[in-house]
Length: 344
Image 1 (cartoon, rainbow, N blue to C red):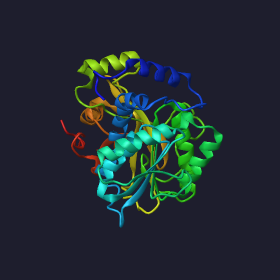
Image 2 (image 1 turned 45 degrees about the vertical axis):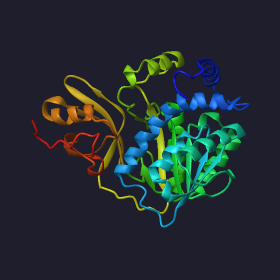
Image 3 (image 1 turned 120 degrees about the vertical axis):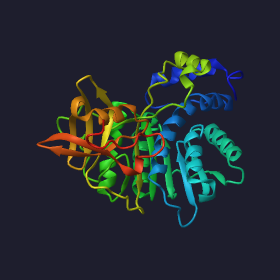
């Protein structure tokens, strides 16, 4: 598939189905060509979100090399973009089998073909959706499931050793992820991302109903200037600059390295001339913080320029932020180095 061979009318039909919303009464896909067109465009855009999440996990050195290769289940696989991104992240040598499940047999066949082409020699199979693999991968599924399938998926998450879950960063979907997160943590799950703690979600308390836990991925360089992607964005009605996502990564076997007092900035910081305002979530709860430009200019500039997750340890005096130090695990290429108090 390339831009010259892309059938734009297929994308128009898929877009109309996506905009209809609700639980799908029948599979989206009428043919392998539908899946190929989706995978090349909509699927690749979802892949950029996975690149962001997996990039953070790479900097956190997750997972450690497993004692044996993992069986990975891509649940609701669609065209298989999530499963392929995850296999690449883990390394094909650390994957014993990529299992695929979807309501659509056409989707499973397409995802299998693409995975076998991308990873020659990797065992790829159609899966039992109620099995217990080593790692469950789920991507952009919540909006498409009825109550029965949602219960089935949550039960799978509850018994799976590890879960990688990524969804659109909308208010409703993100708060669904937050609620599942709390129930899974109550059942013994250990959170790798996005949380810096295992306390109850600070955005599910009274008074925070308008807030939701989401991050923003950064598209690859040059996309905004690519006439084909610009045409796609205009036709699909999407903003290439905005890639919000909600996520949850759990690993029951891992003991996540913790740095006391770390907080994650939720969503996008608001930058004004006299100050910046951020929604900060940490073990003690979620708080809206004001960072004065006059005293914390270098920190505000760092937060504004960072192209990755914003995880900080705040220093406070009389309730006000006086300094911020980036999580050392995330001070890596693509992120600005931590700003020390008083830097000019």
